[in-house]
Length: 431
Ligand code: GDP
Image (cartoon, rainbow, N blue to C red; front, side):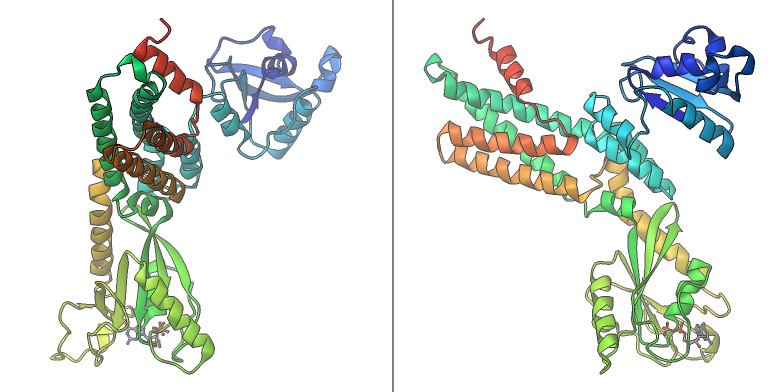
């Protein structure tokens, strides 16, 4: 499908599909023969490009808000090349840059920045959970929340600004009190929203699962088995996995990244020491830690903080009456025993991490959102404590402005006029 956006879109359509005679009815798929543009003049020698479907979306009811035309063509190179050449021959038409349609949509107020980001996420989505989250965000799940917060904040700002500008006109005292209470509510809602353990970001970029264990317990073998392809070098020489190897996985619809790390052990080899250091870093930030042991080794998990799922590999060589360490899940990568249960346990764990948050409400999905919200919260707290300490309203108003700007940065809506409109509407100043 080839899309043209802008004031010349309609003209591009009628000139490539002259048989239509005029623009087709808006938003209806219409069949049309497309002709190469150079030959439109010479009717008898005109060169057909394709028998296609075309759609006409007059602005502003289009994706970009401008006039848009879609050419649904047969996808061969020759068809595409000749359509692009013909469009390029029309004065004023140039190839779109990366993201240019979404950018125009944003600039024309059709989408906010979170929706734009969601489009990119949807295109990249590889699992069901990523798709669901991207679709919800594209539909405005985040924008609605942030816009609501911003609207409430702007309203409180209007009160504050009014009490500065019109101090002698007796803005009642409880207005100020109400406005502090409103700020506190807002700050605590933002607080709640931020306490999401980064679930939205995890759903978007994948949960981290690390694989640790002494050299030779079968980490690379397990990774290969889980990845169902040979991504890591398996060898029986201890210490061969020195780098960190990552394998993307789909666990119950959630994206996960399985990270194989260097064997956790003390070593004199500088490169291996670096590998061990990376392994610890990885394990520290992981959502699931798989710690692998083999028969005859202890069930203690060395050099790691937090819970780990203990996996006893090589259960095929486990003596019949040998003790399995407490809580360890016996598996054999070699025979496949216990592998289904291992995957089930990992899936359940991720579902329980993600479940609460996903069910509750749309979580924030990028560090960009988090930083802006933290800035907003900090400014709100300053405003509240200044107000409570009886500081002058100007200071308070300034912090509120900073807070509103931080929220505006997330959706890309940073507009002073809106604030002024609000003041005039709520106070009827100047009649
Ligand atoms: P890593 O150093 O922890 O990555 O271990 P590898 O995956 O390289 O495996 C070390 C050795 O253990 C290899 O010879 C594997 O074939 C062997 N191995 C891995 N899993 C099993 C298993 O389930 N049973 C048995 N008997 N051997 C295994």
